[in-house]
Image (cartoon, rainbow, N blue to C red; front, side, top):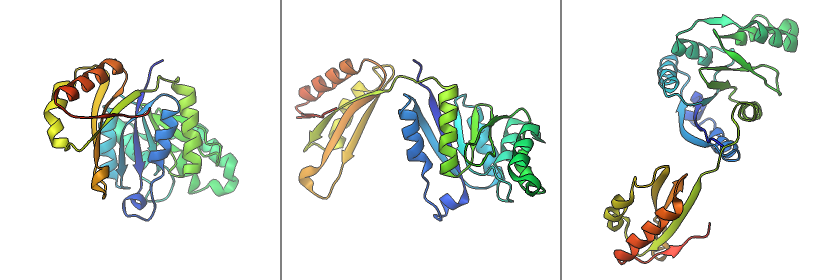
Length: 249
């Protein structure tokens, strides 16, 4: 089973200025992990056309799927639809099926404003919205969803379950080192870093208020020969005279 790495873009001035707290990052980490996938990165962007176009151009060039939440409404500060079209180098056009869905949902009240949400980048396909009926859209493997969590999360589940078969969850193993500063471990870690394809070495220091509880968590995560990597880590720590403890997995 192939594991897919995703990008996440959260769009909204209200996140950056503190009016609202982002809930998408922890939610999407959970949605992806439950299906054996991974989050490669997360950007939080303002409702600023030039910034959105520049960042979407960059993410579209990366070649990995990206979930984008926010800014697809019809108010003047919703720039995501137009920015996506500009980043992809296509026109913003009326999507007839999206227009029909909006008109069916709102009737005469769809005009003149709500129907603007049917103006989508040319070539975009729709993502069903089980809450309001107003669809999201996909373009260049960028999945554009509303900013509202109650809509975005079930729509994201639909995307993941329909388009991305479950992957193999990554493995992780670690050791706990006490009474040794992380700086002393750096030469040792350099000899191990990059030796096992598919695995990433990590070092996480814990600098709590209680000096007796300060420690460093060392280990590997990913997909590869994790047993061999951990055996080499234990051997290197022993050779350096650094005591360590096992960590329950």
